[in-house]
Figure (cartoon, rainbow, N blue to C red):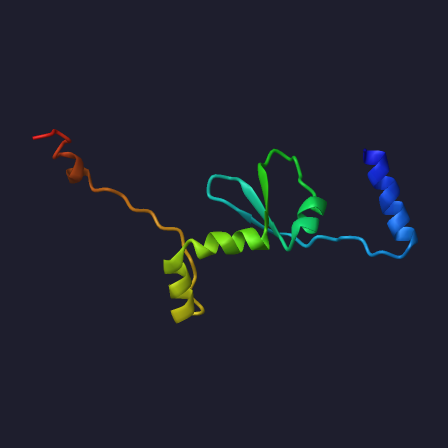
Length: 105
């Protein structure tokens, strides 16, 4: 199958078709996974997935849009304050909270 794809690529180049050169945006998730964001399905198929010990996930822009649509609070904040930045937050439960226990009355 790989030979067939190479042959198709050569034939497409011979006929003047432009090649796909994906421009991926890369970011690291807090637990170490690398994400690469590309424009569309063609670029998702063409982007290189490096195996240098890092876990890499590819996302299309349309997938990112669907994820953001599920965060109405973020959408509203960005609408009201266009320059707002999303920062990581961490909520720590105070120690005294656990003193009450979880007994059922």
